[in-house]
Length: 393
Ligand code: A2P
Image (tube, rainbow, N blue to C red; front, top):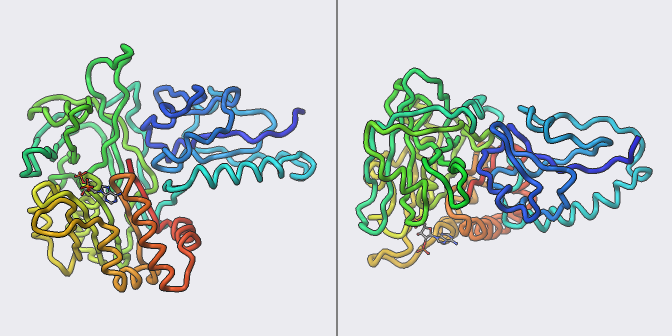
């Protein structure tokens, strides 16, 4: 029997198939088939470059094995295998030393990353990877509406209808969109991930449809494709993906939602779900945009009653107000946020620009300090309880 080794793996249940890890790996150790994204144990050198870029933490899976799992085995998984019993103490196998090095590397790699998340205990069970890269489903565009008045900032509300085909999505999940044509290497485009912005019963209740919130990016192939779609057009879709950025099912839970720009998509889905079910709980939102004219869903948000959603809309480039980021407002409202951090029913969701993460983290650290608590410890505990969720890009 060969000596045990530590193998790097990807959790197929949580992975959202954004392929960022594969594109980041400097030595080609990560690859995919139509089902899964996997790590080649013969190639991976534990450089950890793939860890901080993963938006879900699904990349952060390790097993101690005597025989590494093959690519074929990993491709066949729908969930992670349990740790096998390899026998022997860590000291005997020499894994202790390896673990120390690994822990140090992981700590470094995780700086500023979302880390490993858990779904809220009361979240509904999500369906994942129903429509794969090899067998995408075709949806029909039934609406494409501009959400922003700023001529320089084109954000669209796009409605996709799946007809009689199954596409069960929960709020907070994403779907993949495959742009037609080939990339610059002559390969078909890989799916681009978009967070669903409608609740589980559809953009239009009880129709088999959903909505996406898409910002036109002049260099983005898929966002331009989506933003230009006319009603009636057909779109290839994969997914749904995501098994942790989900809302709790209990009515008493308080949602603390922090977002920028199109990161508001899942927050809209959460809010609409609660509006439709009457499960009010409490909801607090910190939403950052350049100006009111570039803030997606500005009009509809203004109509959501304050007793359902406590809104803090902040602007970084509005001539009418001082430059403000979400983290600035969180600190300005530190008493309110402190009370929420203290409340065991609070669930935190952060979605939007990656740059926001460090600022929000620092704001929380300050408020946790006011409470006499270490933010890293509190954050880890919240994450462990399925109460802290980050999706940034
Ligand atoms: P700015 O770009 O003016 O610095 P959008 O995606 O619609 O452009 O909105 C993103 C919003 O997030 C903008 O207001 C942007 O401000 C703001 N933003 C940029 N960087 C950060 C950051 N590090 N922390 C928080 N907000 C940020």
